[in-house]
Image 1 (spheres, rainbow, N blue to C red):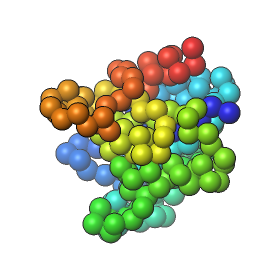
Image 2: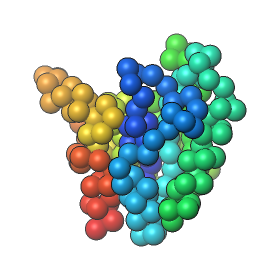
Image 3: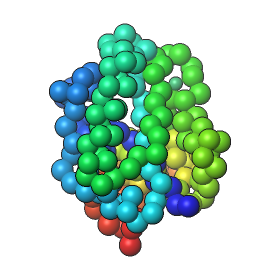
Image 4: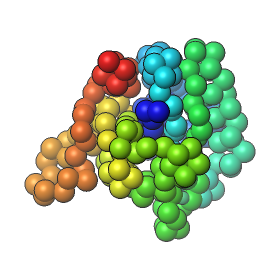
Length: 186
Ligand SMILES: [Mg+2]
Ligand SMILES: [Zn+2]
């Protein structure tokens, strides 16, 4: 079964201003056509997971309970629109904690491999940050960059980096999750 991993902030929903955090459902706004994209990917028979860094928990800015509440409401809206997210993996740790799950590490994706028998060579990871691209590479999935969220900055970063660091380079670039989904389901 083909599998799509999605980053959350900047892909499904708007990034809060100034690198802030989505702390409550009132901070959460779906990006235009994100619900339609998830619906169409679901209905084409793909399995969808979310993999999101949520260091606001480790920093003490919001609680795991607040995050769970946001995700419950997010999943409800997605299901009302006809989409399905199989599971949401999140890293709650502080960036300095040295955990194995915070992207660019592949820990969250590898958990899905373990728990759902995901075939990474048949998987895409759609993200807006360089760390999403790196996590995809580190896990063996194909990275797709979208230009929503921090995507424009990520694009500039990889275009301007003079190194041959291929871990920064996405396989495909799309303006947003909806246009990415057109290509994914074709
Ligand atoms: Mg993001
Ligand atoms: Zn972690």
